[in-house]
Length: 67
Image (cartoon, rainbow, N blue to C red):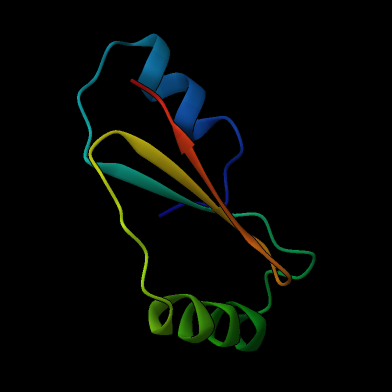
């Protein structure tokens, strides 16, 4: 889990194996906002597979396959 937009690219370009990356692309990284967004995220049932990047914003969730 990261706030760093380059993290996924660094892992992919380095050829590192990974199960998944959750990228929090939030307007506010204030602790209260992060907790609220994560609480919503963890209540949603997603079919998550290996090597996916999940981009989470206050308004939506986007799943990107990397394989």
